[in-house]
Length: 113
Length: 113
Image (cartoon, rainbow over all chains, first blue to last red; front, side, top):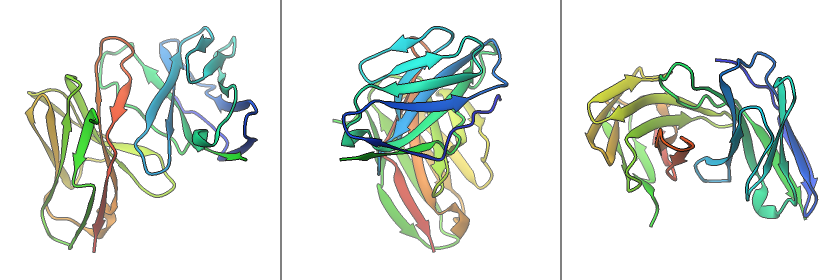
């Protein structure tokens, strides 16, 4: 599986935008970029995913570089509840096999009041 | 009510004991997964099941076994628990139709003394 690289930790002030980067230089053409987050004492939850185009949903936006070797998860206005570990994950849908998620160590986001 | 439930939520057991962790889901998904999470690390896949008759080993299946009793139930067993199986265990489900996102349970914290 292609590997992702994320900063270990980031800080943000409450109500300010947050840009969480992810590098995936070995991404293949059939890899989707998924983001999950894990709030304290909870299981991971899906945030957003995309293939080539930028994506928006009620939780966040995903900006994908033109060469797809990096992406950025954007939280438009961070709240204290957004403090979590954010995981950037690549999923290959070409083989029709396991489709399991391969988690790295993620980015611990701290939101300061 | 939660869509994915896990029992027990916390368990302390002794080395050599057999223990079963249970997962139930009401989402009607065919696919179910068991992951473990160690402190400061991401999740690693133990076993996954695409339907009742399909069970597959994941990245770290040694020392574990599973049973898919029904579409809604997927149990993880530690035949003879050892201290390095002390971890947080998560069950997840997914539906290959639509976004194929995974839905995680709240986790079971297992301590083997």
